Image (cartoon, rainbow, N blue to C red; front, top):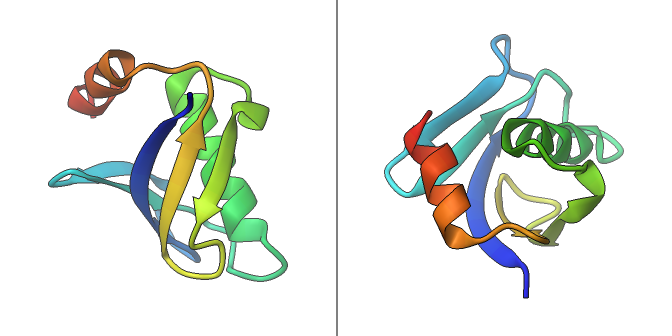
Length: 87
């Protein structure tokens, strides 16, 4: 069963990166929200941050909005919490 997390994506950001805003992960990407480029960049950023393959991260809900729900295969809540605390 994949881990599900809520994220907020900020496309077209001058300063890409990940940050924590309360219990939500904020992903700033340089790519604009055109032809799914921002979504792909957000998935790549989360995968790189967690040290997993991008194919293990999928968008379950909110593909056309800034607020999204991601499903991450093969990651438990404890490992995610440790990575989130490190931000």
